Length: 149
Image (cartoon, rainbow, N blue to C red; front, side):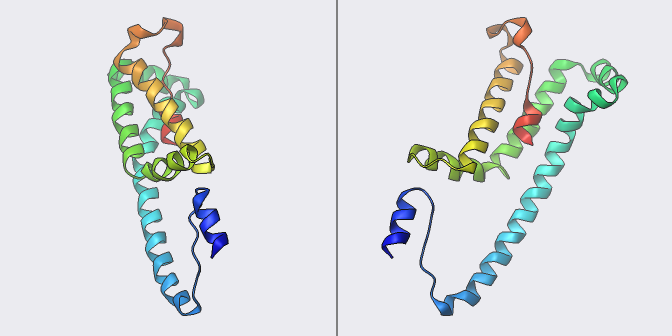
């Protein structure tokens, strides 16, 4: 029990398991798997357009030129901002909910790394999109696909 308390204090939730609770754990894992699957599908649906818009031009340069001519950079970046915000606010919120407290406790872990990286990419890209005059022209690049993926 002391070990579980020490591990929990370091930012890694731990608890003792009773033998009779093992069966109930299977139900919890089924619910968790369903939630993870649902969140993955939501994130995939929201991220795929952002990823294709940003990275598709690397595979097919004509796609980039067509997309920029069809909707333009400001509109594309606003759409990417909205889609990425939805990814981070809903299926991606778990990284922030777990990672930031662990970081603040001095026990960062993988969720902390994901939260910092995705958060930094999103915030920088948001500044580029909404207030581009704050940055030199050569620094105006968005990284919404990095935040969403």
